[in-house]
Length: 233
Image (tube, rainbow, N blue to C red):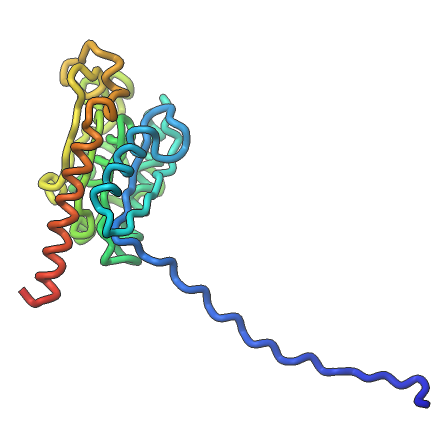
């Protein structure tokens, strides 16, 4: 009998954990900014647009990024959305260079989406903290389509926030942008419109489907262009 003896086993050396794999890159990512007072996410118009786009791009994976910003009546905070959307598009263009980005927004969110396409910062408008300037020109090559629903007109914009810079879609994005305004929508109709209900009716009027058709066609073109480039011309 062995009294007072103990047996100690040295712990086995643990293998280091393998690094986490990078997040898979989707074929398509929709970066969408919701409208004023809509709950966090992409809102009703955005969801209808994404659903319709997925139905038209069944052979491609379509992810969604909801722009993170207040979407409140304080239009100055739209700058938060501009910063967040710009950062996301830049990141995706670098991290997932083969992913086609579809940029979109509804109402105030359409202003956010349009702002990040700008060629330059308008003279006299200081950059908000967190924004260093327009997106690099090369980023535009990764954006296949832009869909804007109910983008505020100049008159409406100045009525709600006199300090807002003009909304101008940049030249590198203009040829792939669909700017939709329902008949009578007081937010986007120049000079104002008389049908308040039309502002929330982009699904009912079929314009989300129209935008999905447009974006799907742009995605097809983008894929064809990429195939041609890989083939060397």
